[in-house]
Amino acid sequence: VQLVESGGGLVQAGGSLRLSCAASGFTFDDYAIGWFRQAPGKEREGVSCISSSDGSTYYVNSVKGRFTISSDNAKNTMYLQMNSLKPEDTAIYYCAATLRAALPYGSTCLSPQLASHYGLDYWGKGTLVTVSS
Image (cartoon, rainbow, N blue to C red; front, side):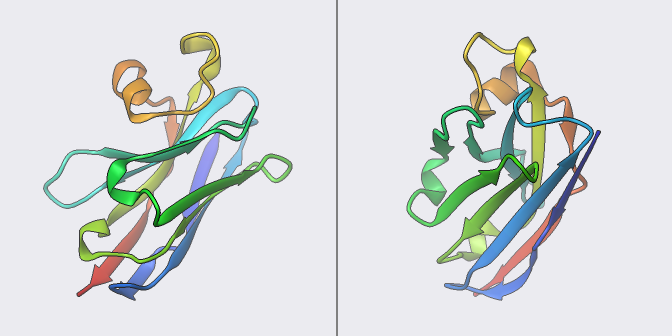
């Protein structure tokens, strides 16, 4: 099982980046997936998740209206379009997956609450996003 993030970089405030997460060794049908980030000196934060079943999404309040999550199940790839970036978005962004069978029935979106309670089964090495002011 492998998750590989890409697309990070240095961008000025107000700019945009598109992150990708390519998964191999498993399918999104069996795992709940999501994007997380960790800024220097701060705890991990759940940013967004998407259900591979019905496309429902979750966003943390601080990114609502600026970030858009999507997935291509055929390609086993998840994306995070980040617009209007702010310096406080600076962090290592990584994607993660948890086996759906281990989550409450019907859980298909790896929300921060689920991740906190049930943990992350797999995660990538992350991609660094730096937003300059």
